[in-house]
Image 1 (cartoon, rainbow, N blue to C red):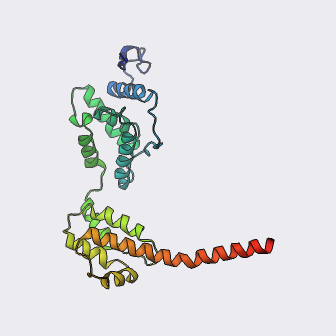
Image 2 (cartoon, one colour):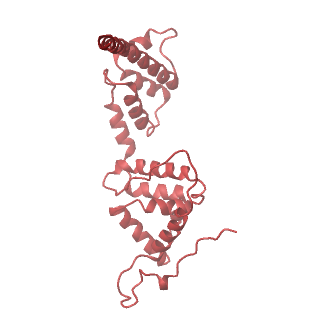
Image 3 (cartoon, rainbow, N blue to C red):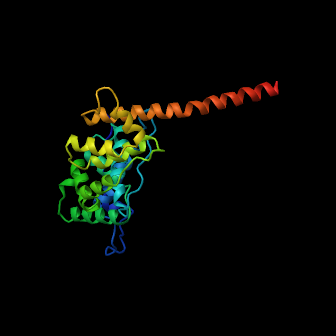
Length: 246
């Protein structure tokens, strides 16, 4: 039978000042949480073909980074499913990768737990995500997404991937009907893609997914044709150089 992590005895913990009890010390919940997390992560690593990086520290100064931080946490959890079985473990892990005002907010919360003021979101990952969004997310993400989408357009000299990622990121925050998404997506494509779509057999696709896939195929074909002369020139120069050397 495998041994379970044992919670530390606070009275013997080196963080406790025996000579001066009035000194402000870390919360009991903070110490216990870090102790439990260190024991959990100290177990032999699970064999995995993918090495996932730990999340970047989130300090709350750039609210746009919250989604990125939570996404990195989820990637790390999925790479170690046998370790992060409980929401409690996931939340404790995420709390070790915050700093600044976010860390201050969590510290106050844990100190309230010690005082008997309980917060249910400390034990549920979906609730934790909702709570941190309440304090550190963009105030009106829908308005901001609509603003960015309204000014988004594809540069004719760019690959379509850059445009697609931005479009999907902003449109995901909106509840636009499919017809509106299709109109906006098509309208901001460069002429070299619009012209090909409008003259294709069957006309312009009526669903966003079909329109999206069609635009990607057209753009890929465009760049394939554009790069072909360059590859031919490269191989010609390589062959000429080889003949001169021989």
